[in-house]
Length: 143
Image (tube, one colour):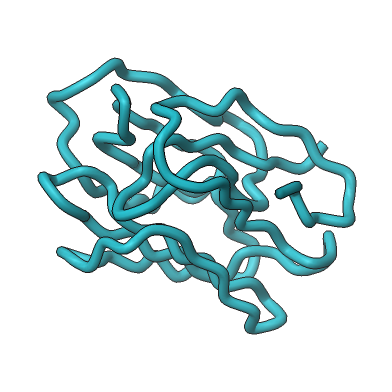
């Protein structure tokens, strides 16, 4: 499977394990910014699910977590510019922060290795591996 985004973008390194199937959460066009994002816990407090809604009302998601779902609705000039994770063979913890300082998080930040996956770039989507929970994650960002 490949990344479906038709605009100019770059990717971060994908961090985590190799389990699950490949996923790509990307907008169809570069003019479709993210307007909301939902994250939820899965089994054993791993990050279970990511769901993104773009400005054209297209929603994409991966994973199967449904515990403690949290949604971040973005304002007109707001965008996601920082992603913090803890990972091992799974994504243990995920924190999403916007350029306006709003954030949501889920998982267990006391397990695995800490990594800043994205900083000072405009997130447009994610890719990685998932099944019952998020096994690995990388970011798609605007050039």
